[in-house]
Image (cartoon, rainbow, N blue to C red; front, side):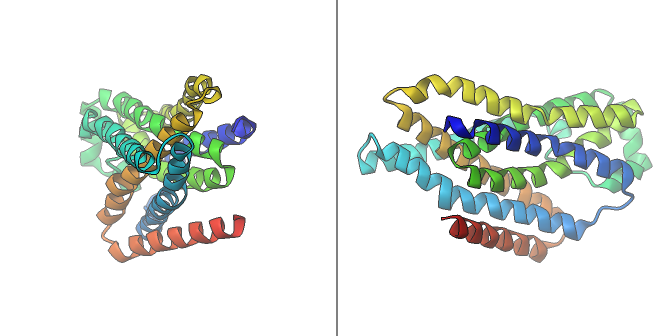
Length: 273
């Protein structure tokens, strides 16, 4: 996997810094295209759900199978999968909803005077939101990096899906920071910088697991990480992407996005097989 290090690092950096796109949209757009946003969020969820169950979960099972019986391999794969879900669920639970970047705001919030007053009274919300986003991005960075390290083709799809997911998060972060500080520049830079948590998370994961990948337990470690990555991405899709898309009242459009995301991922994996 080490030969894919540069590709994995660049993909993770791309996914993380896409929060800056959301920041820019918040400052230069006067209206949110809800239909497009609903569709791309659904599309992102479709890609992540499909690749998690069809590509990453089976790969994790294969890694476990290299040193364990079939039944034990399946048990540990399932255990690692739900452990990944538990990790991201705990992160969500212990971040107050006021500062949770997954509580998505639209561009119109920038021009709502009532919300402006609310944000001015809660100055610390801006910084806490940026910190919260960094915390959330850390496991997402691990998911993107480790997937790309294991298979660059899958890594590209996941990086794009995570990047799409991070754009509305950039809006969510930049809006309160702007009203808390009055500075577009500071809001953009803090939101943009918070995305660096993704490549940092991926790099730290790589440095931490590398010593184990040269031992007899390399298959077990790789299997556990891949299964946990699949769990993290499925949870993000079900808990964040789809509910956010539904908030805009475009149920069918979000489902069309999910289906088309799955279909595109299936076709790309078939073509690259």
